Length: 417
Image (cartoon, rainbow, N blue to C red; front, side, top):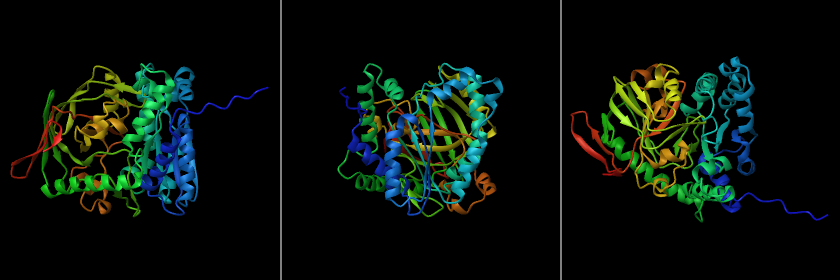
């Protein structure tokens, strides 16, 4: 009998190793003795194993990984009893919250099929999402309040790759998506860690300029968009590397091209249209159009996924208000690649965007020492969700509005002015 060598996945192993190293050293800034809680789709097993290796090389105390399986998720929708969709594993998320309270870091590998739940009952999807949001809140608060160092990176799941490159055979699509991920994550360089240090410096300079201006609001204008986003009292812009409350400097998103801050939950007016599709929990929501009054979405529609969108908006009171506004130039490397990833981690870094729901407490002056009541009083939003969607393009202009009403060009045709 002759044995055939096992077929290797069509992913560059050298760059994948670099991505794992960047995730640990740049993304997490993992410290010696620190535990790590990781989540990943089963398809991302090669990257999860390499991250585990580099975490231990960095001195991790214990790495614990939870894997998700697309077939198992779909089996729930096909066979689970009706009452299943109002439940979530609260015990698991309570355990994660305890791990973070005890000092663990958090890493999520993104790569799920964006269309996984597209054919499922939107009502069941919405119920399951809401139950998960409620259960996840204890852990999410540790992340959104930046109590811990955390990171998200990605692996090219074949079903995701085929959505991005539908005209290519699966192995070619996976290779193309992998190379796009590597380029966006800056691991196609000889020294990715140094490349990230340079990039973080540029994002810090952009943030410093915006913090110096102290705008009261941003005004977005473009096709289907005339939106004024008031900024929270005492807001602070951030971008790239940030220091968590535990004192560890990390890059939460790999990749990242954004500078971002907290809007005022009560001071958003006008209408806005999405410029890229939103992939949310296995559902694609496209051509979103919403109208704000007094900071709240009072009208919402979409050409695809509208039912899921409106159920998301009904998650809680804060779901119809903004928790983040972010600026990204249209010429960012991810936008310039021309690839539509159908994945918020990437597509939000090709375009200016806003986020429904929970704000980040770190986006306030002295945010680490503010109570939740103080954050709310300054205009910070609270919600079970935090969902980014894209509103920028090469046809969108942005003005900063000062306290005296003076207007300063911030972006013209999607580029820094």
